[in-house]
Image (cartoon, rainbow, N blue to C red; front, side):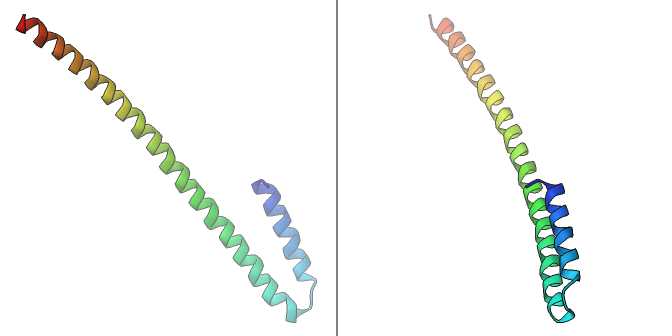
Length: 86
């Protein structure tokens, strides 16, 4: 379910709750509001998680680049040492 569908269904639910007797309405309105807040919190958590994953991916790319550069330097220095020892 995408965001617009969720919001539409929640709005429909709130409208339906509005037609109920006052004794039942208050509790259901509270539950609908809690659901809405939890949805917002969940979206925020997912967004934060996505940002963290993006940062992790970028960090891994930098680490791989650094590892390859270190390997090239190591190979070059070993070659220089071998040539000096001969």
